Length: 222
Image (cartoon, rainbow, N blue to C red; front, side, top):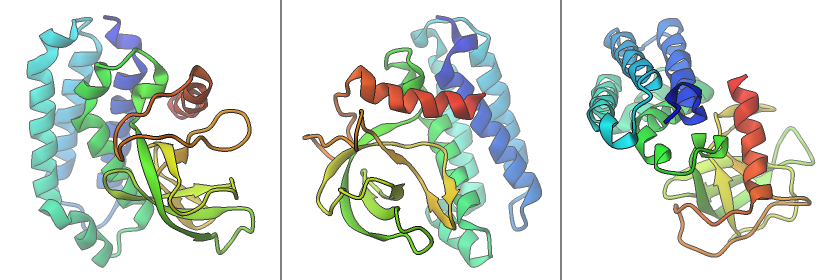
């Protein structure tokens, strides 16, 4: 297994680096957060250069999960994001920390999928629960999407409507004209795709649909 070049491992490495920068440069972050994410970085590096098969890396993944649980506790437990918002930490940083912790915690699950850069992030079937026009862009919609938890997705596909079941690539959060988007609707050709299935599960996707995710992942990792 070529772990050194695997985009799924490179994504975890990149997330750990970005999380450390947030912890170092943001007020109200616990001091132990930097130490914990540094531990995670070292463990990811060991995985990256192990060239081992997945079954032989079980102990490493268990240690990564343990570190992420300790980090969650250090940040304040289950309600940490609400606490951080109350202290003035901006929404984009909170979203990036959520994204990074998920990427690292569930790295082993992604490595069980095909070795495709598209699977460096979660792809989940989501249901559009509500939507409204972006206040700063006439051609964008802000969608509240249930992917097993509620996230915000900003789309330029104006055909999207409440109740649509759409695959969502959980990409690194990005501020789009003042609103943070936590994912991208997956599509092929013109418009986003609609799928049947269970909310939160990985839907069946064509290579063209996966390629739209691949491009975004590789752009982020450059």
